[in-house]
Image 1 (cartoon, rainbow, N blue to C red):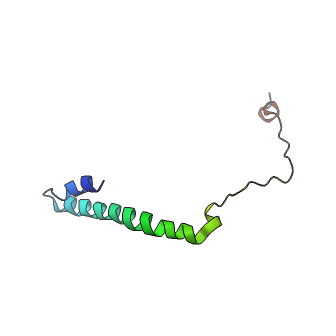
Image 2: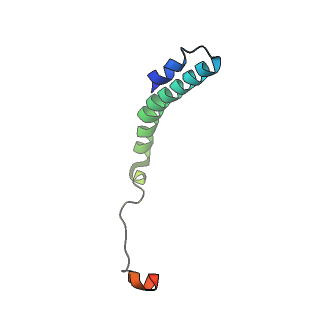
Length: 73
């Protein structure tokens, strides 16, 4: 993606150059900073809270009406 956005920087229109450089920098920052540094460190800090749903606890069985009663057939 960075190389595709960098192609925009070689165009003659200044708006396209700004767009290409901006998108290329955004993708690089996301890939390098967020996904390699920030995300793993936050996952380490949060520990078990990462896996929020965890185990589903069922206290008592729920009774479910048959589909015919719900539709009214």
